[in-house]
Length: 336
Ligand SMILES: Nc1ncnc2c1ncn2[C@@H]1O[C@H](COP(=O)(O)OP(=O)(O)OP(=O)(O)O)[C@@H](O)[C@H]1O
Ligand SMILES: [Mg+2]
Image 1 (cartoon, helix red, strand yellow):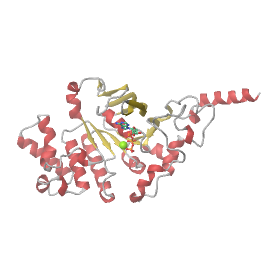
Image 2 (cartoon, protein in one colour; image 1 turned 90 degrees about the vertical axis):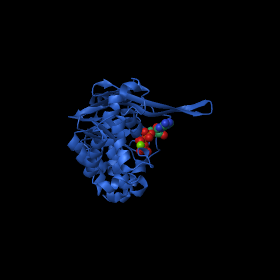
Image 3 (cartoon, rainbow, N blue to C red; image 1 turned 180 degrees about the vertical axis):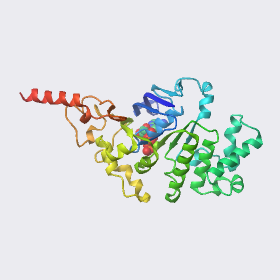
Image 4 (tube, rainbow, N blue to C red; image 1 turned 120 degrees about the vertical axis):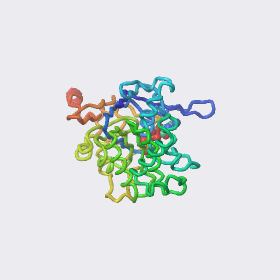
């Protein structure tokens, strides 16, 4: 459904007239999401998850690389060519207010995309809105349709934002931390609703989250990001039960007890200096913080993301047998 090919996103940092450096937000990510598949992206704050999600929706253009949606290249065509894509690809963001107008009623908010895309008559549209609010359990529906965003709880507002994204029956949904601003008690319900809708509609979903526990529960595959690159990608259970990359191992050890009130602590857990996307380390981006660092190898060139076992890929020299052998031979030669 969606294919990212060697995507890079760089932002120029300016102060006044001068360029102060370049932020390397995304550095060579390739990732495919199949129809009906849920892929979660996890990683520390600033690792480029949101930027990558925005590229997948053409809200951001890649500095380098390409994005394909249903076999059509979408990153380099003009906005005018994206009409169908704009209907088929939708998003839910962390803050529901970013996609809903506070001065519109729920009914107007959810109906609007249908009007924009000229779908159905007025009564058909309202019937669709009603059915969707019902499916998202915003009860009593008739009453909700007349409410304004400020008259609802955060969880209800996020469900309205979800309804607005789903009303066009998209094939792809990008959900960027959809529940991290919602109080803990309604998080599970919203994720459950998203999951139900995904199954019913057969959408592909990119689920961006800090919460590895929910990623494991909802996603088919998990991709782990570090400094704008994918360091590990594989089936969710495999990643959680047998993480290969030292960074993934850190992240998973740092998952606290299931009490969601403590989950925010995950944000700063990996020991060592937080990385700078302005001055990228040479070699593997993680090497300055890595407990398994191998001199002369990890600081020399970036390891590629390589498939180690079926569907499970990792970008780490520990698992690149040839590189390890070469390094050992060199060490022996140096000793001789
Ligand atoms: N428009 C922009 N201009 C300059 N730098 C940006 C811009 N957008 C993002 N960045 C930088 O790019 C890097 C990646 O940011 P991004 O928001 O994609 O990370 P993230 O993984 O989503 O983080 P978080 O978990 O905090 O949401 C960060 O260093 C961020 O400061
Ligand atoms: Mg983000």
